[in-house]
Length: 358
Ligand code: PHE
Image (cartoon, rainbow, N blue to C red):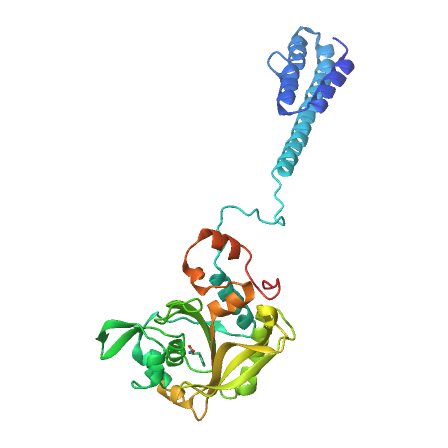
């Protein structure tokens, strides 16, 4: 019989050094295949004398077993290496920033709604909604604006033809009717904000017949004017990102709040340029007040026990101030160049931890 030690080393070396699964299979066939070298030697055993055959048989069987085990071992190694290589090649770094693809831009109004919701969400306010087409009872009467009240004319209401159950239908002139709907549906304590579309028959550089407001309403047994002031001062400073932004509450009148105030923020108009911040001048940005007890009663809320505050902010106005948009009508012209300039990255969702836009 030929030099089995040399053969063994040769075969095991071929197996252990096989660079891939194909080469390993080649090495297996050349050793253990039907015409393999070990197979051929085993076939020769028959021609040997009995005691020689037993001895050579044991050696060949051991060789066969060793080669089989070495092949299995190499197979595992190659499999693992192949998996490692694939994992390395297909590796995805999930921490990489998203490529700005063809995702479009977020409209400044949507962005502003998200920012306002993030700020009030942090204070525990939940988002509520109501219909754009309102019943005049919700839009006016329940809010303590009786039929002949001048506020009905002042608001330049769009009336829809006809009536439902004796009530006229209107495009809501403010988000305040959602105060009424919420108080009818849910018992206090309430803490809601209502972003939504509103409509008034008016159109120029600072008015659009369709615009947006965010309403706020808080009702419980102990909320007072101090809470109203605290929440709105905090909102103004967080929204404009100016920690020492001056905020002033100026007495005003709304039928649905008593007392009522308008909120002004500090600004400067030096050199004909409007700048938000400490600057000696003032700019009105929202209306607010303590919910009128008559409004609570209109919703079946006991005004001897509950009280609260409400406010309404014009979204286009605060978006224009923050992002330097000069003409309100441009918001709704669907001009893609405008949207590319003033719009926001789709995945850049505002929150107070990551930061709002400045
Ligand atoms: N609804 C008022 C408006 O549209 C704003 C407002 C809301 C004022 C809530 C006070 C309280 O002008």
